Length: 90
Image 1 (cartoon, one colour):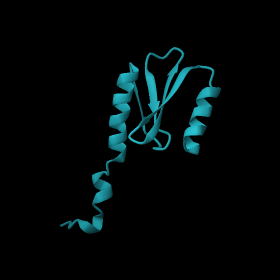
Image 2: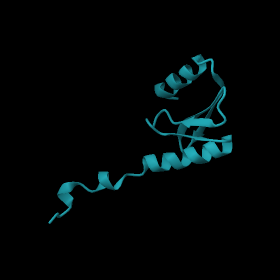
Image 3: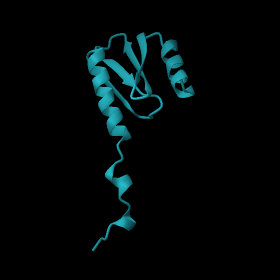
Image 4: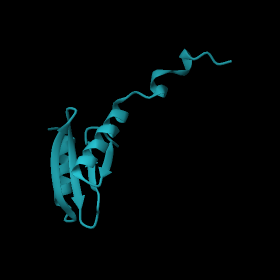
């Protein structure tokens, strides 16, 4: 488990509004699932992929959504593949 994951888990555990927390491995990464008081949805975050997060109305949906978010996060964008020097502009 990476230091980023440990840091995120500690912050959730310190938050008294967090009702429950669960860790699960998805595609080789730790995913933190959490439920907060007053929230209907379950949050999902991948600490080792900064900015990669999602949510769902159930654990199953949150996991499905985070898998899609991870795929999008890990798929190179067209901007990172093609540089201006590779494109012949008129």
